[in-house]
Length: 75
Image (cartoon, rainbow, N blue to C red; front, side, top):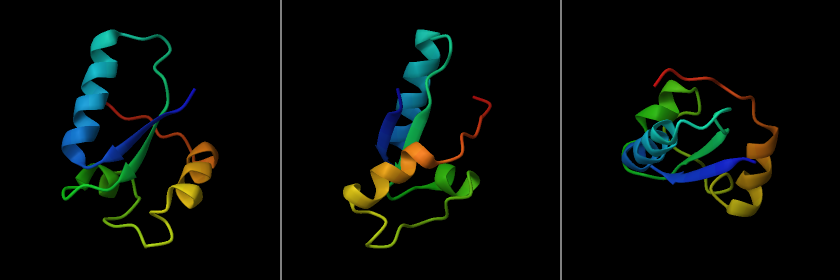
């Protein structure tokens, strides 16, 4: 199951912290859609700092999440 996060760094950090605190094994994959004002996590993962109008439409973006390469991060 893919969990999706729509927001910026603060939202993403809250979700990642909550998942980490739950100590789930295996850790579930989390898809990130950078919509906040601070998107440094997105930049660090190579997604860039903003989405185009086309990319930000859920009908366009959500299917891409399922095909995206999984990147492990050190929390």
